[in-house]
Figure 1 (spheres, rainbow, N blue to C red):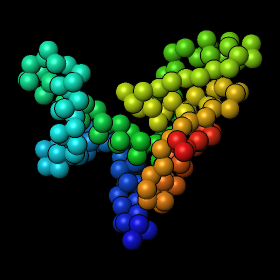
Figure 2: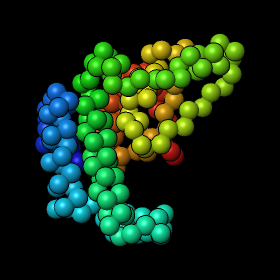
Figure 3: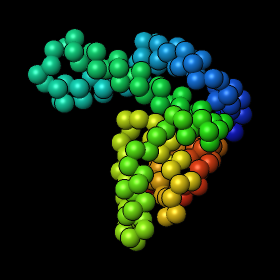
Figure 4: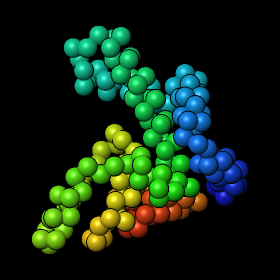
Length: 168
């Protein structure tokens, strides 16, 4: 069953990955409508967490943050899919490493370097910096239950020479 599901979904993911960015974000807006308004993915948890994080905010302000975070989450997911086929030139254009000189200086001095990245931007793309550094880049990831999708995620994340380490 996991293989069948993968075989049914993979062609759709690949088609999404070859879309130009403008169209990708149009699709992302549509997916947002489904995830947020139709499915309501983890809405109760998100709302509870927003009340905990922002108890002084009005309900309307928290709702605004909620909707923006869902839009952002879907955009990031779509960008992860785009990583399946994105060119090096395109990722260079879209993912700029502003402090690379600082990193390279530390690297030349033989210093250990740890980059900690939150799930704010397209963290999938930070691994593209591995083409510009000499140290081995590692990325920690959580395994996906479906072994076929897990392999896809590993393939996507290792496209730019990242060495993956599972959370286990």
